[in-house]
Image (tube, rainbow, N blue to C red; front, top):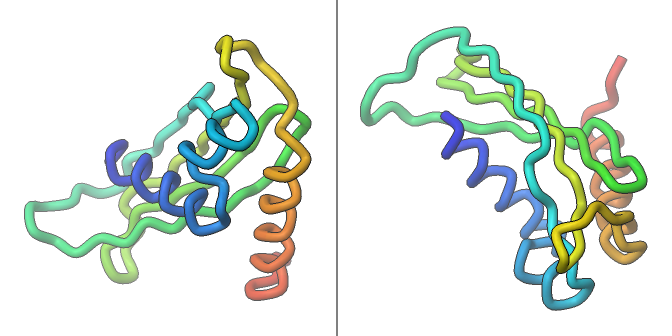
Length: 118
């Protein structure tokens, strides 16, 4: 499951033009996993079609909090809380660059309009 949520998170960032490669090239920064809490609720089996849902919960000055879920149809299999930290080229914590922050904020805004939370 960790591999699936890692790939989904990478693709989500790529979709908002904040891929690892783009961040390193444009801002000399990247996101690294700082925290990962998983709740395994049900097993998956070989050759089952799974869906990973990724939501950005909060964007801090130097961090990003996500919730990711793995589903088989209407059955929730795994819930993950992921904490990402932004680091610079020297592997030191740093603020999320304004250009990347703008892309994340726009994504959060679009997500909130598409599926408002109660």
